[in-house]
Length: 238
Image (cartoon, rainbow, N blue to C red; front, side, top):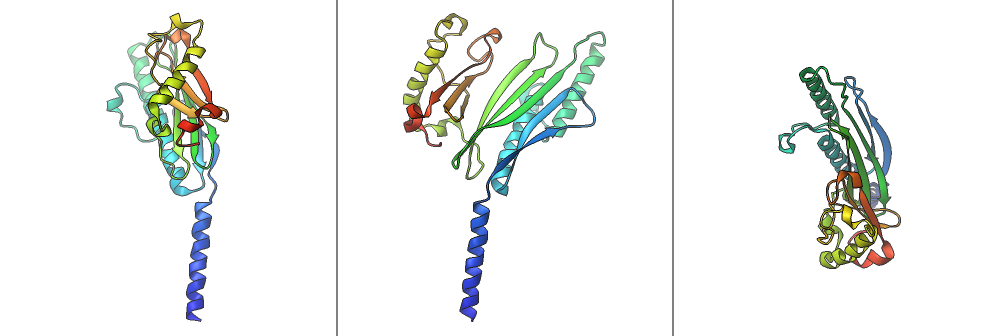
């Protein structure tokens, strides 16, 4: 009987741990609001399911929002929560109004998040922030976050690709196709560099350059997609 009981416990624990590992990861839309401001709108996503994986992903999403709302030198950033960042953004605007009481300028910020791609191996999330803090125009910044679906750890761009040099040459051909007929709008287009933003969608790998990275603000975002059938051999995740 004692051995049967031990066997029962082994089977029970195996089932429990198996269920935990197979807990599907889902994403819910979240609107973050506070009591002290109406100039910031945050519509992001929150991962739920496997606790470790979801916590890792949600932590990185929070860091991205905090960075987007921070005013001033990035190295001086002390905010740790979205609510604190919203409060500090609002306080900075109030200080701005106190210094320039005649200005009609109103600050504003909007941050949105969405899942672009999800597979058993990788999750790709796009974070889009728009901030206007008194300049001639607001600034839109898109950030792609790629996560290992099994751990929730952020995957750096270098780890996405197994042959970076060959991949760069391939990407360059797609870049040249994208800017054909408007090369004069870009800063040194002959000196091709990979963007900071590389992400996944259902069609392939997206490469995106934000405003000012390779062209003036008036040019807007530059992005193109390399199809999976072309890029498969270079991918460490899919």
